[in-house]
Image (cartoon, rainbow, N blue to C red; front, side):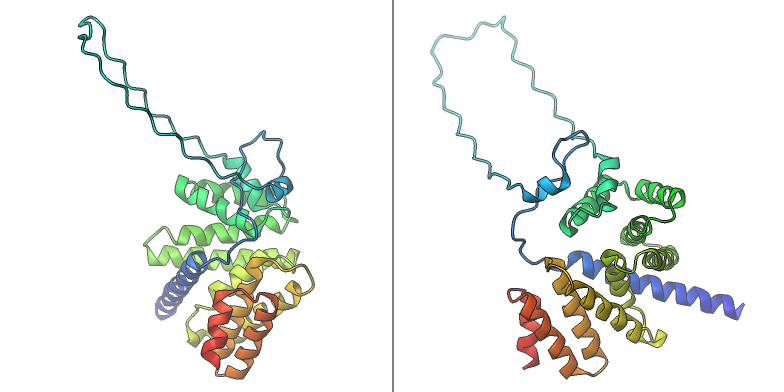
Length: 277
């Protein structure tokens, strides 16, 4: 009985930590993009993901104001019925399969994936997405993108429920499938980053600080071997926070300074460096 109670307590603590980490990650201020992201296309569109990234949306012009028509003094015929009001336009249904394809596409940008998660949350389709991703992962267990997206789906679901025990179960499932994704593809940035963010909020008594730092350090090495992307700045920010939490303030400053060299306009890194002086 004592062992069961301890296991339940660990589940609760882990669930709360992962939920807080996910909330911070989803609500953190995004750096301004170089070009505005274009909304996801519906299925059947001839525009590819690459073309959407290159396309620039045109700003819509405001409609001209309607002109005021003067009323005539002649009375309206009583026999003419008033025009019926137009029925409200139904909202376009979410392109569910296309949205899932974006989440597992190697060509989709980080911003496009975040937009896809937002679509699923707002449409109430997270449970459906979890079921579909679980099925895809079972059908093709060699593809790392499926467990990587599935882990994020579990954490997204975590943020929509209040049952602490269920949050803990989902958080543990997420951590396991992130490990599966990384065993298939150690370079999967989304899986490693999201796992590290969630783990950074585990209770300090679980001694996960070194493992979290190791994940962020691996991400830094991976990022600096490729073209910089806006979301990469968060890795330096969070790795410095981990050094600072461990009492290594000088190492934290070096990491933030290293990140600022790559992302000089990132407000978070500039603020960290200003406060470290």
